[in-house]
Image 1 (tube, rainbow, N blue to C red):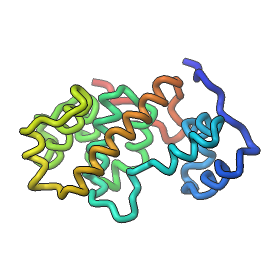
Image 2 (image 1 turned 90 degrees about the vertical axis):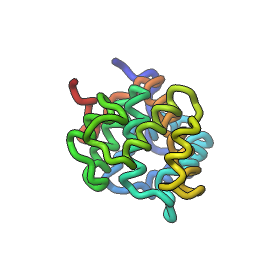
Image 3 (image 1 turned 90 degrees about the horizontal axis):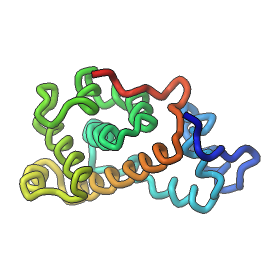
Length: 185
């Protein structure tokens, strides 16, 4: 499958190059998602500045963030982003192979999940299926997450759904050496 838009190439607009220079070394050369967005420097900058998943004073643990985002990207059928998240964050988040597999092929009732993980899976599924949260899931979130954490969960779920729209709609291929395909059933 061929990507629908070709990436921008160096020399990049000054704001794009500055953003690339700030990225972690393991993200270089810049990923296709970033270089394709670099075709529109103003849009690229708004996209990068809007990334809520890496707030310095986050109210979420990395495991909470990654359980949610792996499920969001899996439900969107976005192995481009899902595979990179597994590569970069699954170990740090303490996710087992069974849990990573269940983000794609399981559900909140999969035996590998803790009760907290299962709530995050349910949240991702409800947001994906209906763009809302049932009272049942809302009441399950409240004892675990403060108001600010819930806002972060909602915002990162939506942001990474947008990432899925971009990656899937543009038919971006998995990144070499870091992109992982969805696991087989």
